[in-house]
Length: 149
Image (cartoon, rainbow, N blue to C red; front, side, top):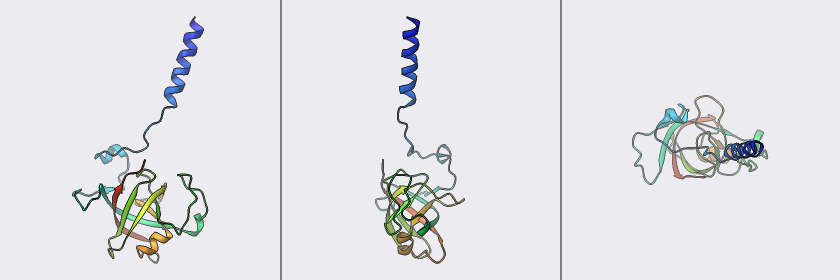
C-alpha cells in the first residue's frame, strides 16, 4: 500500500514539473520582468500599438544566415524578422529608427540581443529598411502591434 502511494506521489510530481509555464508575462512592472534595458513609454495610447518600448537596436546578418533560431526557424537575413529576449515568438512589432523616422514591421522569431544595453536585434533586411547598416546600431521605438504566443 505504501509503495502504491509512493508511486502516485512520484507521478504527480513528475506531471506537475512538466506542466507548461508562460515564458512571458505582459505586466506593467518592469522589475518583475527582470530586464531594466527596456524603457516603456509613459504614453501607451499611440496609434493602435499595444505597448511601446524605447532603446538601442543592432542587427545581425551573414554570420548567422542559415542557422536555426531559438524559435526553431532557420534565420534568413533577407526576411523582416527580429530577436528579442522579452517579447514572445510571433509578436509583430513596428520598429522606428528615431534618427530618421524610418520604420519596418517585423516578426519576433529569435532570442537576443546579447550585447548590453540593447533591446532588439533586427535582420539585415530590416536594418537596410531602417537605414542603420552603416552605424550598426540605432535608437529605436518598438511598438507591439500583435502579441505572439
